[in-house]
Amino acid sequence: MDLYDRTDTINELLARYGVKFGIYKNNVFKEQLFPFDVIPRIIKKDEFDVLERGLKQRVDALNLFLKDLYTDKKIVKDKVIPEDFIYSSSGYLAQCEGFVPPKGVFSHISGIDLVKGKNGEWYILEDNLRVPSGASYPMIARNLCRRCSPKAYQQNHLEDNRNYADMLKETMDAVNTGGINVILTPGRYNAAYFEHSYLAEKTGAHLVNGSELMVENDRLYFVDYSGKKEQVGAVYRRISDEYLDPMNFNPESVIGIPHIFDVYRKGNVALLNTPGNGIADDKGIYCFVPKMIKYYLDQEPILQNAPTYLPFYEDDRKFVLDNFDRLVLKDVAEAGGYGVVFAEKMTKAEKESFLKLLDKEPRRFIAQEVIDFEDLEIFDNGEVVARKADLRAFVLSGDTTRVWKSGLTRFSRNPDSFIVNSSQGGGFKDTWVLSQ
Image (cartoon, rainbow, N blue to C red):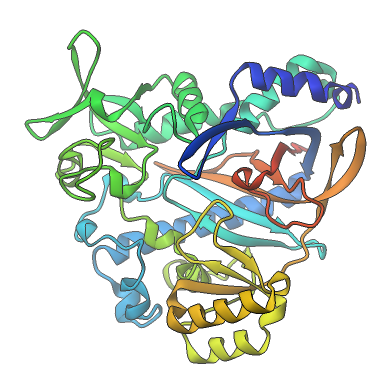
């Protein structure tokens, strides 16, 4: 297919359009390109149908869990999830107690990371319900690929991924309390600033920073350059909980909006995603999602977790210590590929140091079996080689729960690495979901 001859052209166009991400390292901000590979991941229709049902099931259960946790706490009272495990999570926010957001939706945009094992089974690796990013990259890549090689899309029966912006706008509109939609960015030096601006353009929402929003009479307003005020009904916020409101969270935040959380608690603005979702992002809580599905939906999970162990509990800790060298250890509060260590690659000194930390802070880590997930072909210096790849699926919840028939396929450019995150040097490719 002639698309394969256009790798350099498409990457040059991505660079021209500013499709980059930023990394802070040693207190220095550095922007770099997110390398794109033109060989698409292809998912057959019947296979994606299963993924779609499983992802909707999982996100519905997670939304019910968040609503329950911050109100009635039935799942804790019924001892499905231990109380001490909930409240020891850094993602739990006591400030969110007793409030249910518009439509009862806590996670409006969920990024669910999966891998496909070489046995053909899909496994959920983690749930991202705070500020998941990445949808913009396959959106713009597909658009550029269509321009460079229209025949590739005329000759194949694919789901069109250009509807993500419509899905996102419909999700914002569904929970909007009255007013305009805005996308709140921390600013130009955020790692995902390209995505913030791109989604604002595509959805018709205002792209704003904290200085352009103000609270007055228990309402939130956007104030433009001329001083004109417009009421805001929905905020797709791309900043972390702790920086959202200096009056309610971190008082040193200079990018948040004073009292926005109070307006939200009074039901006068919707926040997407809601504060407090970090408890469901916790990789320790991830272990309990299959139980949530059974508890809230009375269903068996369609998609399985990777085999996971909690050193917080004695039996699991013993298993982890007995099988340490064949496991991958993850910090429950980290993201972006950080806090992930493969035991077999540790030196003796590193292993001794880690085991001491594990003994001191067992709640901080989970241990997982290393899934030998499938390799996908990529172009590397003109040659086709195999690299590990995952899939971030996007599930949007408003009036209904819908799965975007596309996704962000990330791959490792290091032949010896399982880490695919952009922050760790990975690249991305388009995900073709076949329509028939």
